[in-house]
Amino acid sequence: MKHIYIASAAILNDKNELLLVRKNGSPFFQLTGGKIDPNETEIETVIREIKEEIGLSVSLDQLTYLGEHQTQAVNEVDTVVHGSIFIVQLNTPFTPKIANEIEEFAWLNTTNFQKYQWAHLAKEFVQPWWLQLHS
Image 1 (tube, rainbow, N blue to C red):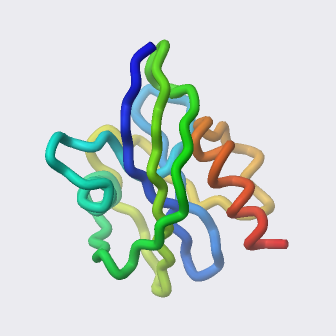
Image 2 (cartoon, rainbow, N blue to C red):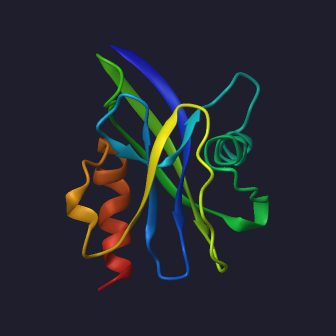
């Protein structure tokens, strides 16, 4: 079994909608983020990945640590993903400018979130936390 280590962001807009992205060729919607490069911290990774994937510049003071989770990777066979997840709360409107391997994005709310196929990490760890924000 292979192991990968990633840092990801649960990005929320002013209505607490959650941003998920879908990579080229994958049916799964996942958090913005990616693999931690050698000699890079989780915070450096998540800031870099947010900029690369959706064109959003965030600073350290915009990140709140949510926690860690490990589960089966959805896009890599026989792989366990270990994710460090941060929250980014946006207070102004933002439209992602998708790039790199990202094909699509979606703002999820309580009426549409079940229409999307969530990656395991997002569904198992972030979805329960996010739904509590709306209860």
